[in-house]
Image (cartoon, rainbow, N blue to C red; front, side, top):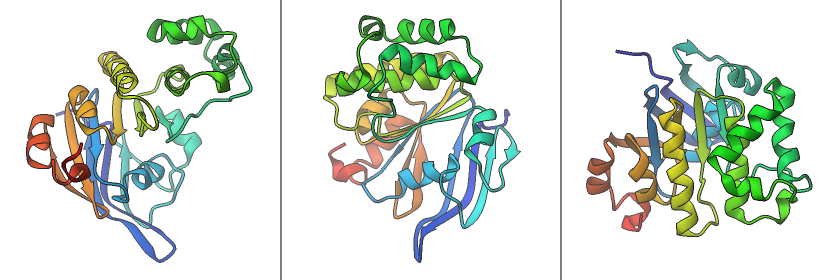
Length: 235
């Protein structure tokens, strides 16, 4: 049995005296798409912040590709292949699409390769390459954010609310691309309010509520048994 790309054991985290993560256990197998679902306030975004090194845990263990991560540091995690697309549009609004993409080349990836990857996944960005990122639609900005993340050749991609503020048809299009990305071998953990859309492209799913994982399984099983927990059945 292969080593999971991500394994979280007994993870706890708090904001001051308020404990938000209360012993989270979660596994992301290599090459899999895992949807992390649950109502607002369940602790999903906090979990991603801890896993990506943006917030320190109070207890528990994180293993990335079998390597135990103590005091997670974003730079160290990036070198190990972890890349996060946070909630909202993580682009530079006053730079063009092309400038946003070529910035990634400073990390050592040839600019030509960055542009080629971006335009292959998202032909719309080729049409917008000279346009300021901040003047594009929310969906196009999210495409740009995804392209910048892919340029780092991640082993594990963390997606926090990819659908935030977007129309359902755009969300469907973005998740079609997520499925294509997964086919290249990239492991993906996605937090999503559009539960059924995320489940459509996922291999596994986990449901979080009250700072704990309360169910894990295959998408059909989770959709059938946990619909009342996932957004009160309005997933």
